[in-house]
Length: 102
Image (cartoon, rainbow, N blue to C red; front, side, top):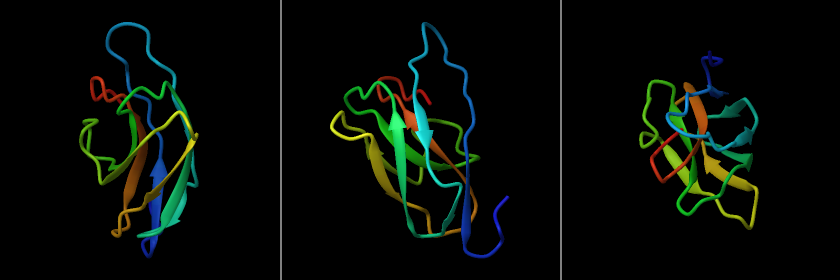
């Protein structure tokens, strides 16, 4: 679902959390971005040590599979990521680094 030229399409998907109470994280960003451009992602979440936000292809199912990432910080609720240079379908994900849980 991209425009076939220079755009990159982003979507969100819900993943089940296995075991215990799922931490809450939200992400907000533009859904269409030029390939190779930068995108700013606003987030809320637990901000544990080594949690990060990533851009992954939709076929990359595991949390440790991604095209690019940035660690989150309690000091800011935004991260800026460089979008992959190849147009396609990607997801922006909040990753709990303690267990690579999406």
